Image 1 (spheres, one colour):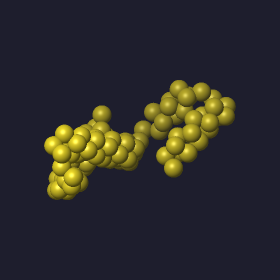
Image 2: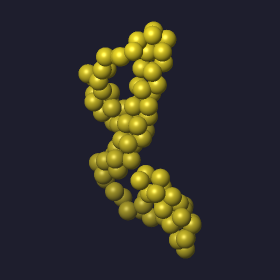
Image 3: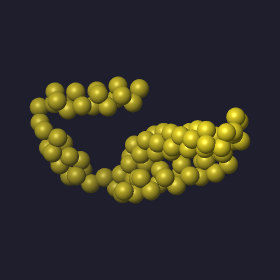
Amino acid sequence: MLSVLLSGFGIGMLLLPASYPYYMGLLTQAHYGAGLIFAAKFLLAAPFCYHTLNGVRHLVSYILSAILGVTSCPPSGELHPVRHLVSYILSAIL
C-alpha cells in the first residue's frame, strides 16, 4: 500500500503544472503551526520507524538463534512499544 502511495505521489508531481519548489513555497507561506508540522512528521515517520525496528529485531533474533543453536527464542517484546514511541518522536523532531 505504501508503495502505491509513494508511486502515486511521484507520478502526480510529474503531472502537475509547476515544479516541486513552487509547491514547497506554498506550504512555507501558509504558516502552519509547529504542532501541525510535528504531527505530520510524526505520522510520516511512524511506519518507517516501526518497520525498520521490527526488521532489525527479527534479524538480530534470527542471527542469535542461529549462533546459539536455540530452536525457540523467548519473546522480546516487553519494551517494544516504548522503543517505537521514542523512535517516532525522535524522527519527527528531525
